[in-house]
Image (cartoon, rainbow over all chains, first blue to last red):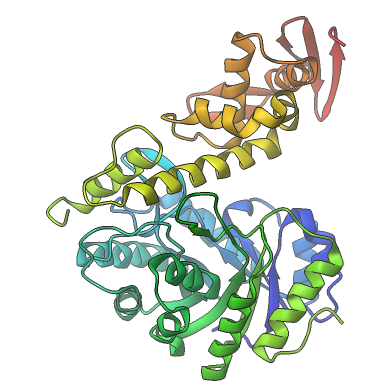
Amino acid sequence: MMPDVGVGIGWRPEIADFVEDLPGLRFVEVVAEGISGRLPESLAGLRSRGVTVIPHGTRLSLGGAEPVAAERIESFRRAADLLSAPLVSEHIAFVRAGGVEAGHLLPLPRTREAVDAMVANVARVQAEVDLPIALEPIAAIFDWPDEEFTEPDFVTEILDRTGALLLLDVANVYANARNRGRDPLADLLRFPLDRIAYVHVAGGSVGPDAQGVYHDTHTDPVPPEVLALVADLCRQVRPPALLLERDGHYPPADILRDELDAIADSADRPRVTA
Amino acid sequence: MSSRPLAQAQAELVAALVGMAPDPAGFDRHRMAVARQALLHKRAGGVAVRWPYLVGCLGRDWHLGFATWATGRPTAGSLLDGWDFAEHLEAAGRLDDLARIELARHRACFSRSATGVMSRRGLRRGRSGRITVWCWGSRFVVRGGI
């Protein structure tokens, strides 16, 4: 179970000091593949203060037709162990196929075969990692042809059959709706909101291509439209936790604090910056 | 599309996205091109973190230069991508002294094998052109060049 810990931020080595200095912080997330051997001192310090740390896998490729490698599951388990995490998270996506690394999370075809692949791989993980797992639907620049499910139905089917929880990335919902020409709020409300373990919030920007495709970069400010979706979501349900994901181009500390405050205010949760 | 097994369909998609094969049937060509560019941009950013002097050497040509070289070559991770690209530029005589020091230091401090990259132990030497780097532990010394 995800404890009720409010607003948090993705821990990254580049902003470790900033994260440690947040007075009201009670939770962070860390990329699971970055944890091996001993915990970095910064994370160990956060743990000793009672901050919840969630390992977030990015390279297990649970949606791949190939069975997830045993070594990756073992590393994931060790990370969760070192962090005494209450749950783990990964993505509804794949990252490699045919012996080639894509280098990024790729969307699955929304088919029964893909559901089966996710279910099989989640089972392999759960056999070794005795913790709840939350699965995150990703932002996709393109869709597969011939889909059998809508995205919310696809996600619900996977959660039904795996017993997994939902890591709802509001920025991804926004990006996908925008790039598909759909209403973000309508799409958001079709997800199984009662299964939310926690929420991701992130920034993005429009690329230079002719269609103006929106990219979920994690290196841009969180757009007001995404904050509005957070507010809309929190009028429907009360997520235990909401995480700001920032992966680079880190702004000055006061700007980052303002972003955390904006998320807290949108979610009607206490600010962690004071 | 739905008649192909998932494994094959995923392999075809990845091959297309890294520039090794044409787009599979049914995918939006424009969106696939945008996705390919986004992947290259992300990859270039990852290499830039590990190889800052290589980036400095190319300056404003960094993203385009890396993207041109990287298209059709799947990623081996930022460390190896940068290493391979640096050697490509070295062979073309396009590395400046700082980038040579960076490459020589990697050659001194790491060994490459089929399974990846490992730190080398003890006192080791790496070269690029007239520059030699001696490395032991986390320390290194540069001879030649500048």
